Length: 86
Image: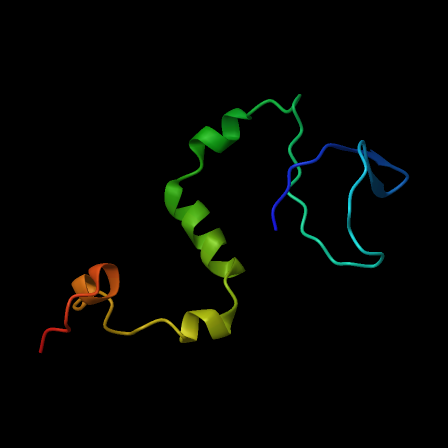
């Protein structure tokens, strides 16, 4: 389940600003957005392939190994469900 909530970071922990229904010790993922953050000029100079390389490093190896090896030649099959070409 995905839910957007606001929190304050204090003393090394995130404190929700509204009640949440989450079990004690339940693991969650946080996406942190700071409204006062200014985009840096350096990010505009970073080539797109460096971002792509960083994203690839974050994919678990077992997930990469599970990808089909014929994705380029059989893209219609994987994208649209068409029969595989021989």
